[in-house]
Length: 80
Image 1 (tube, helix red, strand yellow):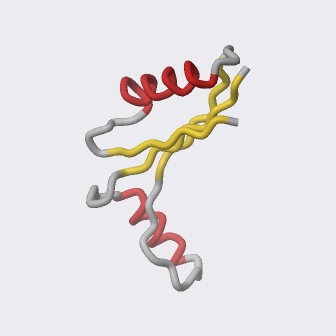
Image 2 (cartoon, rainbow, N blue to C red; image 1 turned 180 degrees about the vertical axis):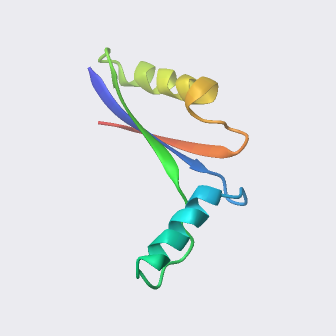
């Protein structure tokens, strides 16, 4: 079994209204000195294989087809 973490974030230049709302809320709570806040998604997955190359290929395919909107989002894959 291989464990993986996929992190999906908006590409630079794409507006992030949730990140902006979080930034404002943190400021309202008294946290100072914040730069830009960007939000994203994290997926933790377990793949029933011992083949890391196949796992990585499958994860990339999952991201391209469902987990990330590659027009506006980037993704990274980390195997554990």
